[in-house]
Length: 203
Image: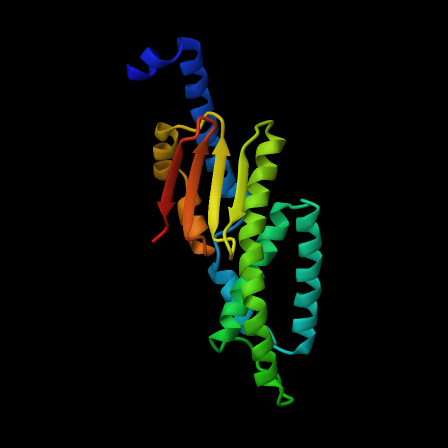
């Protein structure tokens, strides 16, 4: 095997073990980080929700609170789940869903919603990356996961022993590509400690 010709056998074994960990880690994250975006129950709730100033105020308060938590890296899976719900609600409202306000302020409220949705979209991607990083720390592994780019639409996974074989396995066995695309990521980049880079456009 070419790998054994290039590196010591015990190092190759470590790489295999790390690959097994990565596969199981990301498989676990598929279940622990939250439900898929826009699931039917969230959509149904959004369609019944009343759209008025009180909703805007509650959401604005939540966004500011989450922004502060992001600065402190104080992230958990519950925050990601709530952002998915807000995201579904805002998309529904923009598309004509929800119960309309009855005081003639509908256009003004819709304008506010259109301004808030990009903030929620960006924050959802940031929290997704931060929560994956948090999970890796809790399991005792140093996987760097970051959301980069102007709109935080590039997802970067970095680990010293990242390999092409592992990247291919993650593409086949993990839902991270599908989940990342569903919340607006345009690209995933895997990086190794040796300077190797594997970029993938999410189409």
